[in-house]
Image 1: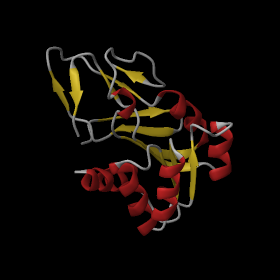
Image 2: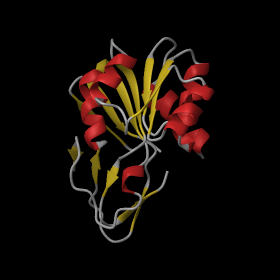
Image 3: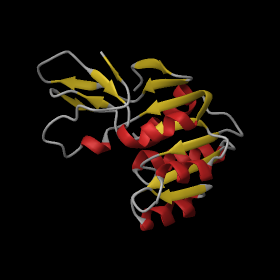
Amino acid sequence: MPGLTALYGLEEVCEIKKGETLLVNAAAGAVGSVVGQIAKIKGCRVVGCAGTDTKVSYLKELGFDQVFNYKTATSLEESLREAAPHGYDCYFENVRSLHHSHTRTLCVCVDMRVCGHACVWTCVCVCVYQSSISLSVQVGGKFSSVVMPQMREYGRIAVCGSISMYNDTTPQTTGLLSTP
């Protein structure tokens, strides 16, 4: 499942092309690590971030071009800018996507919205509804708020997963982008 998720997100959602710069958050996870490797095979420059130095070392072993620990970075904005001074063509968002108090996120592309000059896809998210049918899409919180201004014109974003909410007992209600 992680391999197909990574491949679909890169090829169908991001439409990744040789020579482009890709940012992957939660890059040491099952999907993120495969995303980075596929993008490298396709001739892309890959920037990854993770939350421990051990994970950063792992990403370097996988061949990511630039890697940083977002928890120890003095400035997330500067770390991202140093890694890609000309911005990002694609962003594979693995941290936060779906929000609803009565859903459980599984893993497939359901929606696209335009946010500024970047296309935001809600990728790889099929919800199992427990009682209600309303749903909102929220992209990435603080991390994505810093990434968005660094996206290149016509940049593409695959929104995949919701790791930031796995252990929440109450739904998160803030995000960069929220659509009914």
